[in-house]
Amino acid sequence: MDNINVNINPEELRDVECEACEGNLFTPSFLIKKVSAIQSPTGQAMMIPIQVFRCDNCGEVIDPSS
Ligand SMILES: [Zn+2]
Image (cartoon, rainbow, N blue to C red; front, side, top):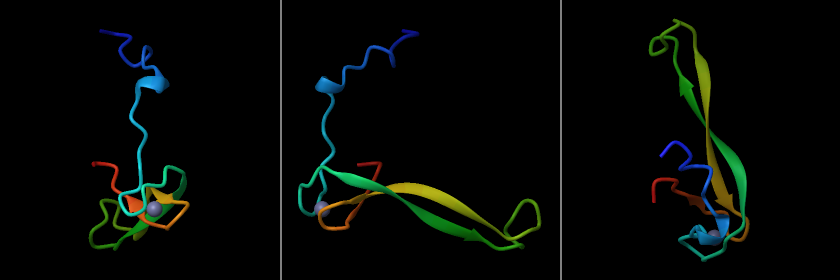
């Protein structure tokens, strides 16, 4: 089972479609989460980028967990 990731054939994978318009082309975008100094483990305010994908057709952000 070591090479389970190596044997993935893209042809067999499901295309992700936009839930809003069924488009299948996406642009990577970032949500930025702001962490205040009080919340931060380092004691300094910081920003954490979270990459999401945005539909090229309608702009809908897709949920990576669905
Ligand atoms: Zn869309």
